[in-house]
Amino acid sequence: MYILATGCQSSGSTALSHDDSMAKRLILVDTTPVIPPPKPYTGLEYEKKETLSAASGTKSVIFNAKGTKLFAMNLEGMSVYEFDQASRKLTKEFKFTPTKGMGWDYNKSRPISSFQEKPVEACFSHNDEILWVSLHNADGIVPIWVNDFSKNTGAVDAEQKTKPVTVIYPGSAKKDSFRVPLIETGKTPKVIAVTGDSKHLLVSNWHSRNTSVLELNKDVYPFGKVISTVKVSAIPRGVVVDNENKKSYIAIMGGASLHVVDNNTWQTDTILNVWSSPRHVVMDTSGHIFVSYNSLGTIACLDAATGKSLFTAKTHSQPRTIMLSKNHKFLFVTCYSSDYVDVYKINDNNFEKVTSLPCGGHPVGVDIYEDDDKLEAWVCSYSNGKINIYTFKKKR
Image (cartoon, rainbow, N blue to C red; front, side):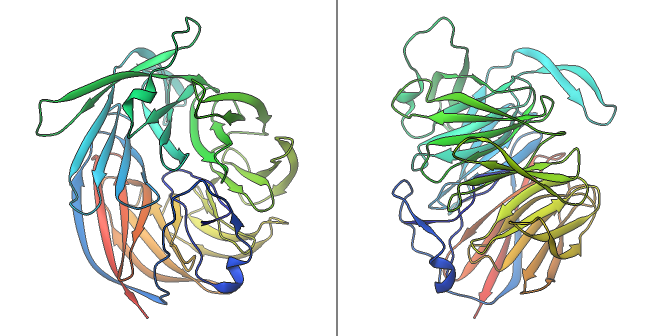
């Protein structure tokens, strides 16, 4: 299929272009299920909101490529929830066994006693077979085979750290259990991004101030190994992969820059100066990077080659995760402290606000489901453990 020049992030799924001129900029790979793109549309009309319960401290959400299942990373709940998109039902809970660790108080900027197994962000690889999850206080990430549990356990190796997982099926006494390998990356891992061919994975490590690069092999346990460490100037968070040009962009949330990584050498190629506190980054197929500036309450469209700001828009306070619609014409923004989700239409030279929707509990993660007639934005809130589904009718 044709795959977008981007990578998985804080709650992001691969998007597809419908514009013929853009399609020429896509690359042909054979690692992702063939998903027919939705029919073209030009507008969105908000219809309704539904609310589901996840677990405490839901941090991010991500759909599989087909859009049939949504996975929620519950940081405080120390679990990953699997929801069925069509029925809205919770189908599985991947529950970690807690062990003591050191966490971080972001309000007081000091270490605190906590637990290791706190899921933050996630990304799929290998045809949605493996879900990679960053564990906030475990100094690493874990791969979970979400469909074939027998593949989660590998050869016994005394040096390989593992984490026990119990799978709970709501409404049933049935349970499954296995151990997943912990691949150490750095202190406080956050965003995970994968290359389009599922050969490499990038992990931004908040307190280590670096980004780990893993080489993946689904046939060899533990399925990934660190081959490079990219040092950055300050705290990193968002990561996006440009598969066509073989570059990756790391948002330096603790500073005012994007580190551009050469995906051939896996080292920093250039540094683009941008505004302060870039948190999340996504990319379309026309050389544009979209970024949320957390402390500035602003989103921007940047030229990927220069970092130049092409146009911007103010948002509600503390914009966190951003997500493009499948046609790259709309941008969804979770605004944490203000309890809003802002929606913008992306024009040639400006952002046009479509709507701002109340979303209690501090919204932080978002991913999008689409079919020919509707678009659903699934938004998770951190403080109340809720997932709000905002449904829009497509206008042609």
